[in-house]
Image (cartoon, rainbow, N blue to C red; front, side):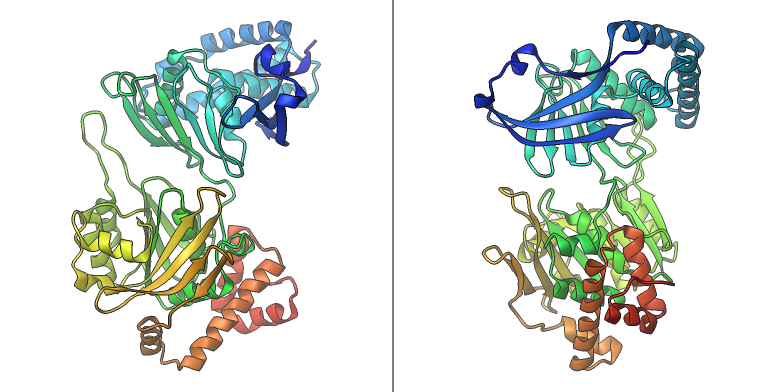
Length: 512
């Protein structure tokens, strides 16, 4: 008989902590591959950061003994070691066979169990045999942005969307276990990590980015940093409802995208640059070819867009086979793109190719590290990037993202145009006191460029921006938040605007 019980993964001392010295900040539940998880975020006396307490449904010792027997039988039946570590396709086939065999053996040893309990045991075995153990449990929490192992001697840390850095109650056995997890990650991406190759930077199949360092490179112990890829990507509706951007600013950006003006999205680390790139990509028309170029796959576009995602590749242990962002940029120009999205511009060669793409008639949208529009221009036009100032006005707008480190809130900080002399004119700027994005300057070039290429008057431009604001409000009112849902409305705008506006004015759900 299988005995399921609720068990806390922390020490007996912690369980005895009095209510006076412990305060529950938040509690919630979720499932990790059929395993029910309870999370309690606690503030404990003597701890400088809150504790992220993980409680899982565990199993009795008798059942665990049987499961260990199953695991040993699995190893005999399916030998992962027989597969070349660099042959990703073959490794996947073996892992699929592994899961199939687990299912057969659970049915053999526990024939009378309910399907739900069998499913739990299968997930437990798969996680223990092939996965990253308790790390897999953390990966399923949608509230987490980062999962960090600093060394085996201290608990795993996580970065929570609502609470910042938290210390978990999960400890790893030893440094060898971290190394074992690193090898699993390496195998999944067809790379090895050894004493001779102690650094690994990879991304998993769902887009999560993993960085590993082995001792003695990291002197305290082996490390693993997992940056989680959002399973529920940002859209313009979510930006508006979270007050990240104003309706007027979003309509202005939409106007620029519709008329194929290039943009740069700047900001500091974790300020939401890639999220903003995803959001503005909602405004692309459905009849154009879009290419995205990234180190790690983070861009998510509506499924009915004509989109080709491209990813860079790191060199192999012999230093061969690297595909850089510059290589992909140069190649993309031969693929007849209408729009090019670039994950992040870091080097001189990339920026040169990027501006060459703009000057040859392509619309380019890229992210860049800078805290404001002026700093973005300074960084672009000075060493080591050193773009000639004469090329800079090819970018119509700079959108600056900002993250408040104290509250964790992300906001669009500035929207600026680049003038013919390569200086920035900030059109809109975030006011922290009112928590609003305010218009602070009149346009000197952006609206002039719009008039030049559309033939519109100022009144006609204003009317179209107002119309776009109405559609954005409609998305919020109708709670259309998914990538495909937003993309469908935007596509309808480009293909049959009059029909869409009937639903917008009546505030009724859109029907095809």
